[in-house]
Length: 83
Image: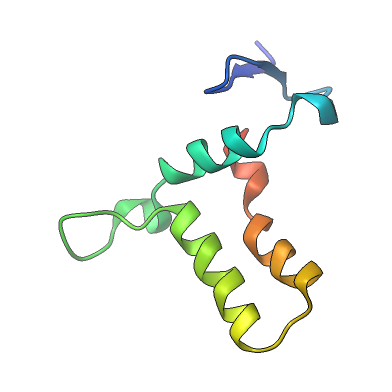
């Protein structure tokens, strides 16, 4: 099997990905359910890849980075949503 089904119901082919099969909603949903550091964080709640991505974008904004770089910070782990 070379595909994964996304939260939005798309059969995303990992070997021949298509841009039209990528969804920001799927990326946000999937990354919110992936734990950073394999879940080895302190506290009752995990730290998700989505939280990490938002914090990176926020830091870039605070440091005065251009919007394009902030967007890259937000989406730097987006491929993890699909593999």
